[in-house]
Image (cartoon, rainbow, N blue to C red; front, side, top):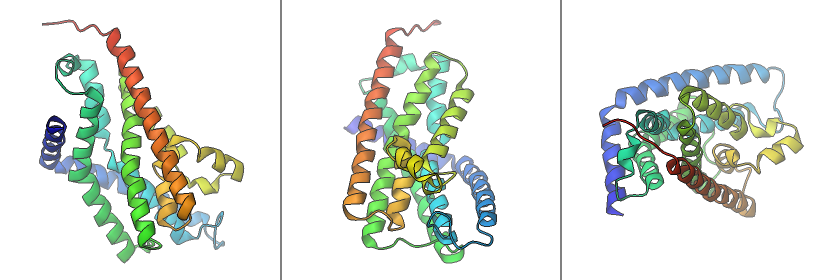
Length: 263
């Protein structure tokens, strides 16, 4: 365990050294959020709600979606794909630590240094100045926090599995964009899942992506409470385990055929 703690600590320190990159990424992301706000604000012209969501609820949901997506920074994906494409992953095979566990610890280091502080500050500013709703209660705040943290591991598992595909292709950008588009759409980060037809929304909530945005957002807003909230988080946890195992399977298949040339 000390080795994994050291990996997380090292990444925490590295992330603090490159705060400027993260701030620029956050600002560009906030520009996207503002564009989404203006888009959906226009959609609310002349109507009080859409699919049971008022403007304040929609704004809060979208902000949670943005923050949940940014807890796992793009750098995690870039680091792994770079290791594979440059061949330096051969050195990782010599280390006495689990490769997947080490990458997860790096992600947690990033989250502790950059993601969580940004989340707290953004939500506080949004509640104070932008009409973002506070949690519906202490239980909702705690449940949303648990779902968000579990969502970090869930998204990390998705990112890990997608990045490993670089073993079979050199086109990392295409993989990354496809993964991001799929994740953002099916998680509710672009369009709240409740805005889809009822049958489609119900089906999408059985998929793993909903655990990244939709589950924590609905718990935060008080739309999921009691057994409903527990069931949604349990489904999120189950998908997390499944995707971590999928990542292990892809890793074994890739390293079984790995050849590194050079010296």
